[in-house]
Image 1 (cartoon, rainbow, N blue to C red):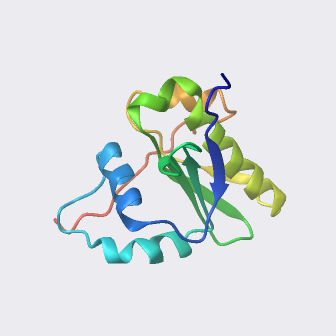
Image 2: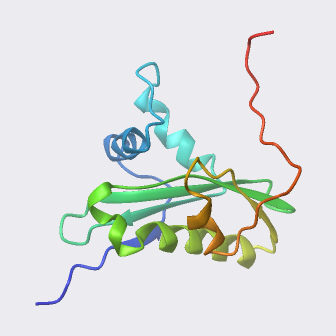
Length: 141
């Protein structure tokens, strides 16, 4: 019997409930978020990749790129459901996003690796940016 090979697609839309499920799996979805904004999140991305289980047609992973389309791109929101992580799905998603950026002439591709995930990204060609510190704006002063 042939093994079910998930397919990775660059998409312009996807069912909101499935994307919310993936954001929840990544620990990034807050109850205050509105799933009705998911279509804009997808179309506002430079590229949005979804890994699809071909048997069920459901999404099992995702990743996206934010970019001006000219000089720089940032990969973010890469997540794969736990039961599919042993299949290198995350690496395949990131590689498709990298290939897409390069095909558009973008060679500066960055990301912020979550704690404990830097080794995953170094195997894909990313290097730590010494002396650079990721920062996040907060409303607190």
